[in-house]
Image (tube, rainbow, N blue to C red; front, top):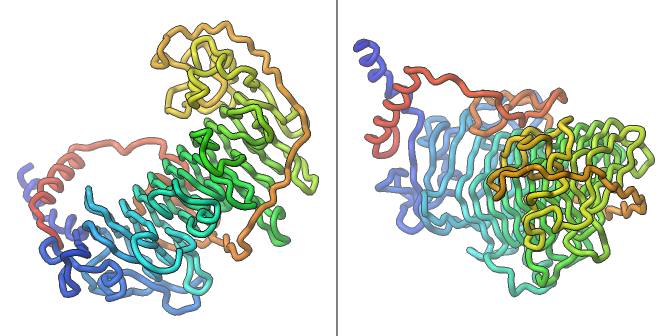
Length: 553
């Protein structure tokens, strides 16, 4: 054993040599610094532009499939596995273009630091994580950015993949309370635009934006973000096999002719909008709220999940909370093998447009929807009829919100004791957990809606004597005019097979993105066993890391 320990400690520097820390400090750094904790660099953009990051780039431009990546800035101090730490200060605009790292490089604000940026662009690059940045154009001078964080596939410079943006604050302004309608149109920026493959947008707060998170990327993860105060669509999903989960979209401002959606998608084929397919989207555990304050200025109607120009194929829409005063709570026009299960859709008022419904209908060109399921949903109105291609069962219309929910006036839609939705659902195709991770079922049967009633609701009695009559309203006077506003230069050809040979530090399983055989965002089915060697390695690495001051040892 002693020989093993000796060998382990002799080899330890080789394990840790590939992970160094560097520092940037706009207030106290120097252009001639070495990036150490005592001599930080002054400018992050200077680090990028001065060749201080070892990476890769295409052998020649324009990019074409089949071209090879070659070394860029060989021998530079910052390498794959390193972290660039940011101290408090103003960093201006960040532009990272043509940096295909061999492994992950992290740019992160030091805990408690306010690393302020005006705009961020990552173009034709891979294996980057940006964490804890604060992006607001009011920090500096210049024209209003169209998009605050732009992750860009570029036809000339090449694709983008394996980028993570997490725990950032992204806003057009810190306070929009005094904005007029014209101010919203003149001053609000788009939040995050995402091209590429295997992209992760996680844990960010977006405030006072036009469009929130617009995703052309495939095989990606949009997770636990908050989009608060927006004037366009909260989220858009145009790429295949992407998961949108546990995001909050709230407080829509009606300031122009855009029809606003909490989430919107449409297909683009060779003959234009509505002539293609969007495949494998998962919408899970999201909360879309039209408004929190009924007296909010510039308040207008918001469509919940509005998808009008299919086809939409192999979608899962489950455990979402939709609170909107529009007809379209959840609408898919032109759907194949989609399931809408255990959602709660509430219209907060009795005014037109509304009430908010769930609907699966034919494509605008008349193509029928097939192989779809609408089940276990609580909804203000059901506008989907069972028939060829669509199963509709175990849904319940909310005739009196106070009968179903703990506090519907304040949007607490947990089921109350005695709610007719308790134990009234079907286990078939139902998610195994509710929106809060509570295991289904908790009582004698599965509950209807996004929440499963359980003891911590305040009462352990789940015997509800439930009336299971779904009272389905199938009125079909549908408003299906989507008035879709589309940026015509969207390039969504992201199915590029690139040998990345790296670990991207995302919570999704990457695979060949040219395959249509499944979603790259599937969660791992288990954890690797912890061995004694693993524990020793973790302990030794932790002890050794504590001895490092900074830089490579």
